[in-house]
Image (cartoon, rainbow, N blue to C red; front, side, top):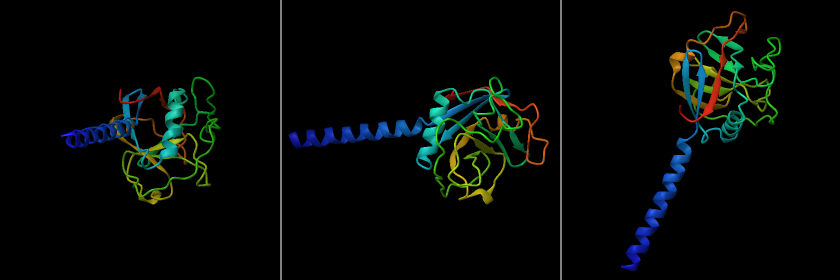
Length: 190
């Protein structure tokens, strides 16, 4: 009987541990409030743990609040996250937006086999694959040419209709005059 009790207790312990691990993995969401409504993104720490940790750290500090969608290309993607030059209430500089990052270090690439499809969230970077920092983009459509070239960090799980309403860029590189912004970004599903 003691052996059965120990075995049962061990199973309960393992089930509890697995449940905690699942709960922790399931909690990697951010909600972006846009003028048209919320967008919920499920982050993928199993695919890009360093990038997800950096995004979550920036969200916790409120760094993404009021940051512009400075580059939006119809049929391709909407880019945001330049906390250095993109905050429309503190430091917005239309000429510099898209060239900055955060005070945190740049990240080594975490390329994966996760494809870039509609709703995928990827990290923006300079030519150096190890230069991603705070900027990210949301895909309007599939973009297989990005596969294995940029780090995938998550996917939109609700509110893609609000992403579709982000003001489009007019310039050749998708530059947006008087851009839309991420009004508030929070951890979790709101």
